[in-house]
Length: 141
Image (cartoon, rainbow, N blue to C red; front, side, top):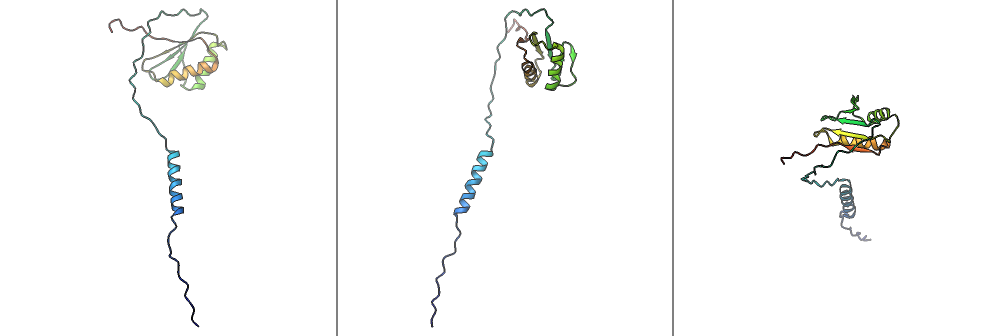
C-alpha cells in the first residue's frame, strides 16, 4: 500500500499583524508628540501720554512689584510671592472692600508672571478699579 505524502504548505510570515502594530505605534507617537511653533515676535509697545487719573480719596491700595518679583502692599513687604499670600494680604489691607481703587506698580524688569499674578489675585477678590502705573516717555525720543 502506497501512502501518498501530503503536500506541505509554504511556511511564511504573516505580515498583517506586523503592519497593524507599526501603524498603532505611528498613531501613538503622532498623538503623544507636542507640536510647538516657535515664533519670535518683535513687539514695539505703545507709550502712554494721557493725563494721570484722579483716584478716590478713600485709601487706595498699592501693590509694588520689585525687579525680583517680590510684592509689597501699601509699603508692607509680603513673606513670599505665592498667590495665596498675595490674596490674603490684599483682603486684609482692603478689609473686604473690593470697591477700593487698586494700583499695580511694577519695576520695568519685573517678571511678567508676577504682574499677571497680582492682576489675577485682584480679579479673584473682585476688585474692579484696577490701574497700572507707567511713566511718561522721554521727550528726546
